[in-house]
Image (cartoon, rainbow, N blue to C red; front, side, top):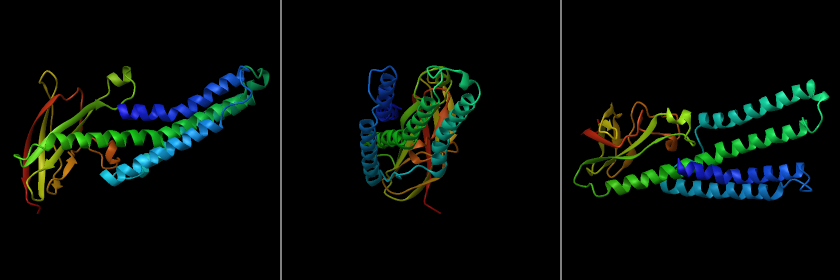
Length: 263
């Protein structure tokens, strides 16, 4: 999740910049809130992200956009949050808000904060997070390629690239989150084959955590792919996919490969 965290922090900079100047403006330390420079920075970051995504599309074939479902979710959450805040602000303004001083309840300020927060969430969910996840998945592919390039003696090689929790902050909810495991399989046979892999995932204490079969996958010669199981969601973008989940980090594994000519 390192690349995702970095990407979100970078894209949060324009909004944090605007928020800091807004606080200073409220305290009378500034004549106006800074909008233009943070806006220009956000545009430049978005263009930079687009260039990165075009590069990843050309090199790895990653789609530019998320799936339709992921896009709907990315749009819905910020809009719902902003809508709830704006509605609560409206109700407060026309009820008890009339009796409050502007220093206690300023409807215009609340609206600006709600819209700014929604814009920040949209930028992170539509641009920053997908960009970070794409970079992370590209790094996983590169690592898998490096780990399998010297395995020509085997007809198929299976490697574990990552086993991590899908949360950005290490808190109570993260401690109970499962680990997403990314395994990759590569075809060294020189022929197109249908392959199925049985994985036995082991913890750091060499304890068996899960035994799972992959889907039957068709691999072309020298093709490397994420190992897909029944837990791999086909509705997710490829950079959001994983092989399977475990309760603890997968440190090592054992595997058995079965393959055949395509039927």
